[in-house]
Image (cartoon, rainbow, N blue to C red):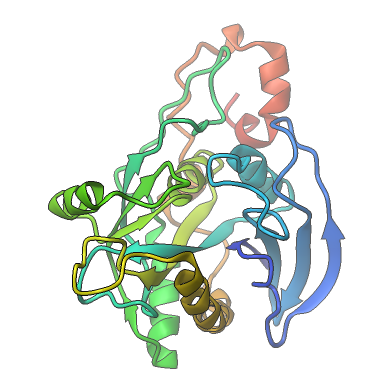
Amino acid sequence: MNTVGVIGGSGLYDMAGLTVSERVRLVTPFGEPSDEFVCGTLGETRLLFLPRHGRGHRLLPSEVNYRANIYGLKQLGAEWIISVASVGSLREHIRPGHLVIPDQLIDRTYRRPSTFFGNGIVAHVAFADPFCEVLRTSLREAGGELGITMHARGTYVCMEGPQFSTRAESLLHRQWGADLIGMTNVQEAKLAREAEICFATLALATDYDCWHTAEADVVIAEVLRVLTENVAKAQRVIAAAVPRLRAPRSCACASALKHAIITDRERIPEDIKRDLRLLIEKYV
């Protein structure tokens, strides 16, 4: 049975056909995840849901313990992660209410740990293509079959937040070639790659940021209204996508650490080996 992690809002697991079997609270070497994991089955797929900001949306994007979240999904056996995230659109053709499957990232965060490594062990994973193409294809095909308006690619710029962009920043991001702006996905993608978990984002466009002078500037009440409508679409796409995923995985994500750890094995501290055992034991 494939195990797929889903990171998103606290109500995302309220899906037709999903049987919830248990709720699991974990402690990882990196602390506690955002909340307990809701575990269930959808057909032949085991699904693990985690509210990114905690139930009741208690955590700022900069306060989310991304390392504990991804490590916890690894502990529970996830080989795939679908990250559902609300974003602002930086392009006219990506209208509020549309879904996007980004293929590139730009990192503008500066306050958040983005790696499991350090403290005596060094690893450099390949990250040229930050999203798993197999998982992206499954999401794209599912959306197409459902007739949902979905864009097959896009560049997601991840800002620190929690404030929305200034108008100058929004225009700058457009000049860089970015298509979407959000506050959460860079750390999730980097850590999933280090954990050898396939990762893709299902982005839900809720607004035009503040670059579009013919539209109103982003207002949180309107964002939440559009987001609520988009969550139902995301649930349908996920339900249609996960049966397409096949094990064993053949993509590069599954062996991302194979040649990435460059530290002399004899010089890795024992406590670090213990804490990272789940990630590195087959290579160290």
